[in-house]
Image 1 (cartoon, rainbow, N blue to C red):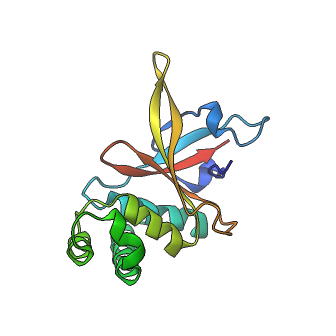
Image 2: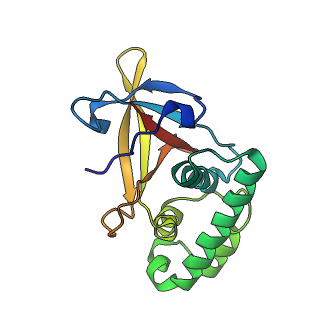
Length: 176
C-alpha cells in the first residue's frame, strides 16, 4: 500500500499536528503523526497545495508566498494545457464542452477536482494521494485515504499527499 513518506519536522513549519491512524502506519515500529501545511483558501488551493508538495519533496522546503502563488498558477496553466492536449481521455469526465471547461479552469479561483488531480499526477510524474480527517474518539482525528492518482504508473517518486476538507485542499506531511 502506498502511503506518504515521512519528512523531518525541521524541514517544514508545523501548522497542525495530530496522531495518525494505523491506516497510515509506515512501519510496525513507527507511530507517525501528520502535519498540515495550510495554503490559502482562495479557489486555487488544489494547485497551490500540489506546488507546495512538489517544493517540499524536491527542494526540501516550502515555497514563500510569492513563489507559491506563481508556481500554483503555473501548475494550473500546465494542467489545463495538458487537458486540452488529452481531450479524448478527459472529455468523458467533464460536463459540457471541454474547451469551455478548461477556459474556466484557467481562471484563478476556479476550483479544481478529480480531472485536474489525475492530470497533475501525470505532469508531476509522482502519485497524488488525497486524505480526509475522520473523527476518532472524543478529541482525536484520524486520516482516511479517499483517492489515489498516478499510482502504478511506474514511478518510484514519493507521493504528494493532500488533505481534503470537502471544499479545500491543504498539503499533508507525515512525520515520525
